[in-house]
Amino acid sequence: MISVTKSSSKGKLPEPAVQGNWPTALAPMQDVTGLPFMKVIARRGSPDFFFTEFIRVHAHSRVSPEILSSITDKPDGRPVFAQLIGENLDDLRRVAREMNSHPISGLDLNLGCPAPRVYRKNVGGGLLREPEKIREIVEVLGEETDFLLSVKMRIGFEDDRFFERILDILADSLVGLVSIHARTVKGGYGSAPSYDHVEQAVQRLPCPVLLNGSVETGEHALALRAKTGAHGIMIGRGAIRNPWIFRQIRDLQSGRKIFQPKLADLFDYFEDLYANLEKPGMREESLVGRMKKFLNFVGLSVDSEGAFLFHMRRTRTRADLFRVCRRFMLDEGRGGENYSLEPFDHTVAGNGRTAMRKAS
Image 1: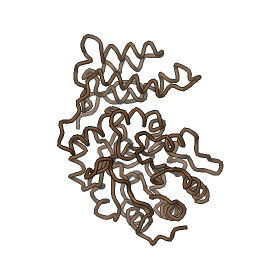
Image 2: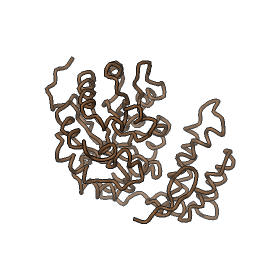
Image 3: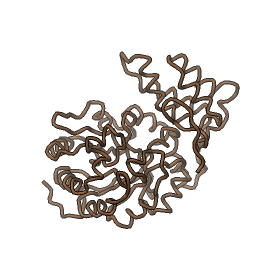
Image 4: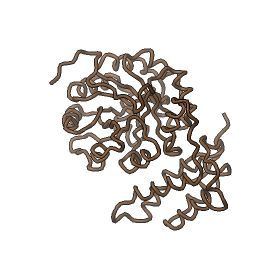
């Protein structure tokens, strides 16, 4: 095993695709960031790094073929980090060793998943309540991985009481990259992000920090990085809504006019996503249901009235779904209209219905 002193990391953070740029990353999102979505994003402008969906680590866990394919068949040859979620030290040690035989650029620990079914098992965001457990886990992973060790975290579970303590634990470990979603676990996705906590992490940690949480546009990404001093930007839900966002960030960094997608480009994205998510033997209703999860975010920028979301959520068949998408993206000359780079203020992607976003 390689001998490494504390406060230094194994491996090196990969360089951005464009020399001189600061890096972007597609955030790991369960049931989203598999190989099909990676390929669709890559055709519209890849991020500098990809992260896999989380690999569940427990006594009987095995890395799924689907996640392995997102590592071995990585689009554009961009670096891929494999994300683990778990808390048993022996099981984490075993899977970390297993991942050493795969072509990853880093091993990432999930300390941020806000799903109740996850944190109730004391994994993901649930671990933010136990700083000493985090210390044990990062020590084990740092010992076993041959790659850069990274952490994806939120600023706390229900508040930030352990935030500084956890930062100090990470600073005194082999962690070489920290990505911070600027909300608490209990804050979910609806609370206001606290980017001041990202700035605090930048000042406290010796390793690079990626900012994550409600990054809506390329301009917003640049402004947040300038405000916080973050090394780079990680984007999740915003990249589902706008798959060109990483290209647009590179446009801005290079001083070029940013790419402005039309609604016709959006329809191409929809068709591409549908074709890539479809698997042999998959029930039509299941695929339509899965597409709706993506279109819930896309619909935030389709029309200011929320009519697309209303009609899309009521479709049940492929024919109905394509008809609604054509109606709002292509029919009556709409294909030549600009697709909004920002979400409209009045609509939210929720549990099957359009809601009013409270004014803040």
